[in-house]
Each structure stands twice: as C-alpha cells, then as structure tokens.
Image (tube, rainbow, N blue to C red; front, side, top):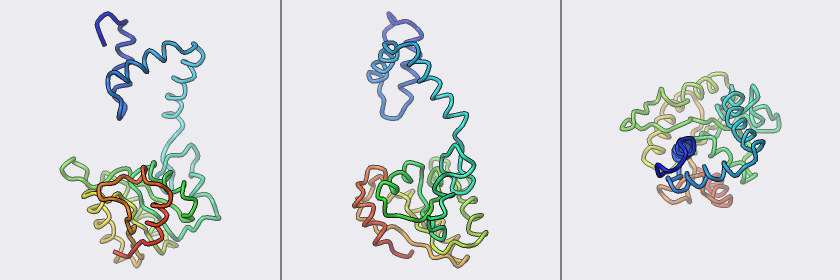
Length: 200
C-alpha cells in the first residue's frame, strides 16, 4: 500500500496478503472492506478468528478439525468404522462428504511426505493411523491422497507399513487428472474414484 495510507490499514493489508490466493490488491480491498464494516461486525469478525484458534483442535481419533473431543464422523455409530479413508487435509474430508456416498471414517495426515520440503513421515499423522490399526477393528484403509508425486510416495509408504498388519490397503481409482486436487473434484468423479478403487 502507498505511504499515504494509515499504518494500521497497511498492516491489515499485509496480514490479508499472507492468505493463500490473496495478492496485494485483493488484500487492500479486503482491508478497506473491513474499514467499511460496522464496529460490531468488525469485532465479531476478529472474535471469530480468535475463537477458532481457541476452540478448534484435532479429533482424538481421525485428526480432523473439531471443537468436540471426537468429531461427529468418528462418534457416529452409523458409520462403517472398519473402513478408513486416508486424506491429506481436512478440506479433502469435506470433498468426500459432499458425495454423500462414502459411509466409512477418515484419517487426516495434515501433509504429504516430501523430503525436498523437509516433510518426513514423522511430521505427518502416520503414527496416529498406526495406533488406530493396532486397536483392531479396521479391515480396509483407502489411500486417498492426491495423484501427485508426493501423494503417490505417501500412499506407497503407508501401504508398506500397513500390509504386514493384515489390513487391506486400496488406492482410489483415479478418474481424476494427474496433478489434480481432490477438493476441486466434482461429486460424481469422487464417487466413481471411490467405487473403482484398487488394491496396492
């Protein structure tokens, strides 16, 4: 922002610019929009940001975001708890839930193995997945990581850990484009990918 702007507006714009997909011009528009809000709306907006950091944490079972001790999916007795769909992030859970076809549970890794970026297996939630397997009751793990180099490497790494444990490990039958991102896939494509998954 130009030096003619008030410093708090400049600082707010810089914070907005840290968000993914927000350039400096969009950040400036957002900062000016916040200034046009009523004091009550601005305070509610700020409180929502603070509140999400205070109250939202990882589910004790699947590692998805929740404000409860266990997320609604893991605590739902109508779900098939013998099937676990392993995804990269919480947004992928939302993508699968939009299909309304998958009735199992999830496990959120919060990243993919990428040594070049310093992301080793111990930096994502693989240990928690193995802990769930050790407790018993899980017969199939669906690897639903994105069809990227990192996604494939992560799927293969986890499958090698799980196979000796007697768990069936399957991979989505991607009718999705290579390099595609799950959260942008339509419901039918995701449903077909689930339906045609294959063992790895």
